[in-house]
Length: 331
Image (cartoon, rainbow, N blue to C red; front, side):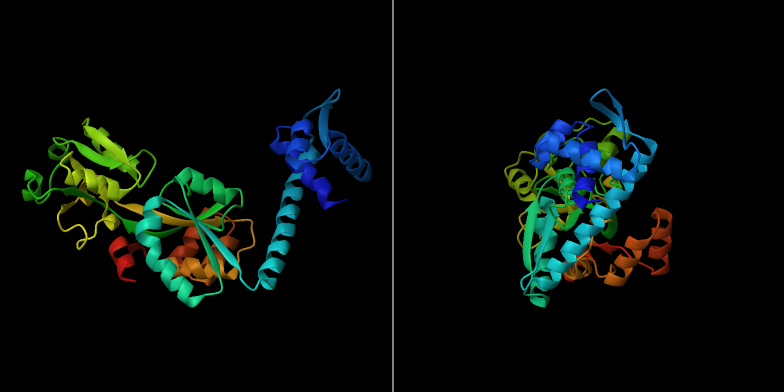
């Protein structure tokens, strides 16, 4: 039995049991893959696949079990390679995927402290939507993903709570809304609104809040970047709804901010890593720098937990707190 044969099995499944496509992905020949699968079946003395003529339909029952074990073996062999590479590297690397808001407003201070502590680590930061970030982590393109949406729903990922944050309404000083200490959604909906694009920075919570009260806000512009939202608020195009962390009292002193936690609720930002993958020491270090309550020991305990219920027990036993965005700025 060879590792390459097991890789062939897994790629055939990924390509919906199409050997031709699997061969194309693996840059080898269809006949070569067929030959290796035949040799493996002869060695094991069983049929791994159910076939109809020359076509593969699906795994046989024992074939399904073999594929599951093969995935574990390949994953562990990759861990061995990563561990060796990590130990031999004089200049190890760490790749992080984050949304624009995280990369722009939260990560700079964290990266500065991390680089000061571990100057030998080469950092790479990738930006994308929450879905793109989750895909990058699942495919092994990055070591860490940081976002508010999309990460918790991926079975292959361990997503851990880092800090909570809310939203603010920003306006020009001459807007009558400034005089209201705690505006209602109905009052907010009277003005044109500028906010984030769908799928970013908790936009769904904003939409859900208006929908629950059967309000149809006039969203005149959406953007990925809070700085763009501020620009158009300054121009008088409307009021803005942004993440608290994106407002800087010194740089944005020409704008007024109104806390909107009571309107749109609180969101939780997450840091995620792959469950079935060797985790480098400096990956654990970065997670602790980003979220001090997630020490390497706690993260390892959570990785080894059998299910989500057990993870919740561990979080509770370690009294893991949430860190609000304002606390994050002061770290």
